[in-house]
Length: 273
Ligand code: HPA
Image 1 (tube, rainbow, N blue to C red):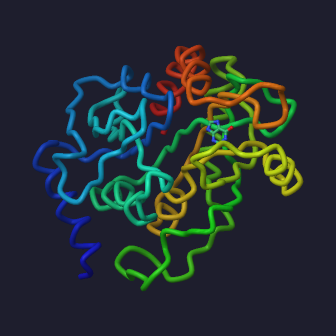
Image 2 (cartoon, protein in one colour; image 1 turned 90 degrees about the vertical axis):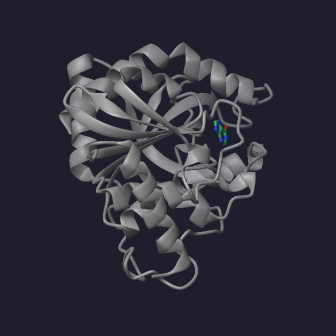
C-alpha cells in the first residue's frame, strides 16, 4: 500500500467511527452552494481538521466540514467547502476527499461550483449541468506512479459525466419547471479571474462556462469508477462580456439570490438517485 492509499484508508476509518451508515451519494459544495446543507436531516458534522490526512480549505464561503445525514430516504456525505489547486494544494490533496468517499463505499458523486458564463445566451443565476469539460489547468491528479488499487493507469474519459444521472437532472428540471442549461466547463487555474482574451479563447474551444475547480475531482472519480454529475451556478458573465469588474462578492451575491430554487432542485434530484 502506498503512503497515499494508507492516508485514504485512515481518513475513511476515522469517518466510519463517527458515522453509523454508508452513504450512497457524495457531494462537494462549491462557492455559494452551502444552502444545500439545509436539505440534510439528522446531520453529523465532522470538521476537516478532525480527519487525519485532510487539508483545510482557506476560501471565504467554504466552511470546511463534512456533513453526513439523509435527504428523504437518501443517505449522503457532503463536503461543505472544497479544496482548490490555487490555494497551493497538490491535485492529489484536492482529490483526496473523493478517494475517501470511494473508500467509504460511495458510488455517486455530485460536484457543484460557481462559474463564469462564457456562453453569451446564459444569464447570471442560471444553473448549468456540465456535459463535458476542458482541462486547461496544465495539471492532473493522476500524475505520478499509478496507484493500481485506486484505478487504471489510462482511464477512459469518453463519458466523464454519467448519462443516467444527467437524465435524472433533466427529469427533476421538468418536474419542478426549473430550467437548467447544459454545456462544457473549462478549468483555468485562477485565482485571478480570466482576461477577456482568455474568455474568447475558451469560447472558441467550445466552452460555455469557466471556473477554477471541479475537474480534478471528476478525473479522480472517473479513475475510481464512480458515477459523476456536476452542476455550475453561473454567478457572473465571464470577463469582457459586460463592462464591469468581476469579484468574489458578485459570485457569492448571485449564488445567494438563487439559493432557494437551487436547494429545491437538488433536494428533488438527490432523492431520485
Ligand atoms: N471565472 C472563473 N471562476 C469563476 C468565475 C469566473 O468568471 N465565476 C465564478 N467562478
